[in-house]
Image (cartoon, rainbow, N blue to C red; front, top):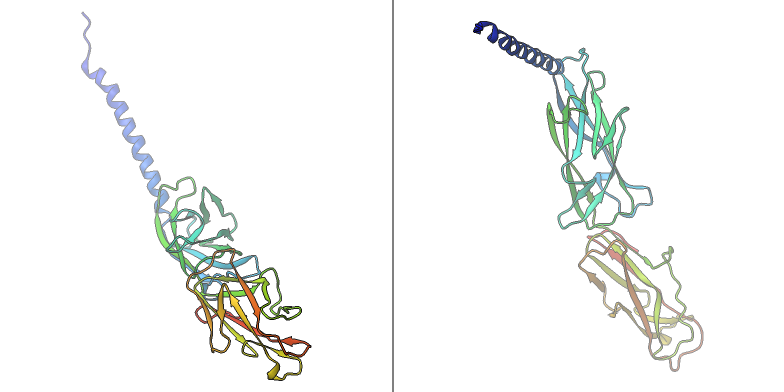
Length: 314
């Protein structure tokens, strides 16, 4: 029979257990020292400048309707320490867009200004240190976006992390509101034309002659609007002699609504904003009695004004 010393059997197991404890303990001290040497917090995330009153211009001819300049600043407890961390920024609502109640959106493109920063999986990364503690970026809103008037917003989640490979470890974070506004504005023109004065040739005048006016009115508005009409001769074609006794009446209609030029402030009211591609509004004119009128040139001038909460005119 062989006698086995129980002490010798137990010792190797005990030595392995001690070894594992020591390795684990040293590893924890190492991690603790890394974070202890980087005592930092996100100081602020600020909108430094933007377009006029942070408004998006739906009628701009520039590449962007609005550009916003932001900076995120990190405060390090020891400005002299050798320490590098990363900022990670993403939108809380999905996508690069601001949202308005009702479903309208404003799309933007992030532009990172700090050297070495990059975008990965819709997250923006930038290294920060006591020597370079500010991360600057822009939100650029491309032109030709058309939406209803109002406030558009989203939030940025700004997180301080060890580095881009350790994004699950968050040392500090801030939630930053980002927003822009579309003002109540309206624009009117003749469809397909750039000029603001259109000479309409009526041809030979005959009683009851009707013409559908081409081009149509073309409206783009971010809100409900009013169109008002005014005639120099109160809805009459005046002979070249300028004698009122030779006036010829006419009926002017817009979207099948007869405009009474004898009434001050005659208006066509539309209570809803238009779509991105605008709205074409037909116009027509019908000539009144032409009997016993002298030959010659007859004319009138119609002035058309549009307003959206008092803004915009033609």
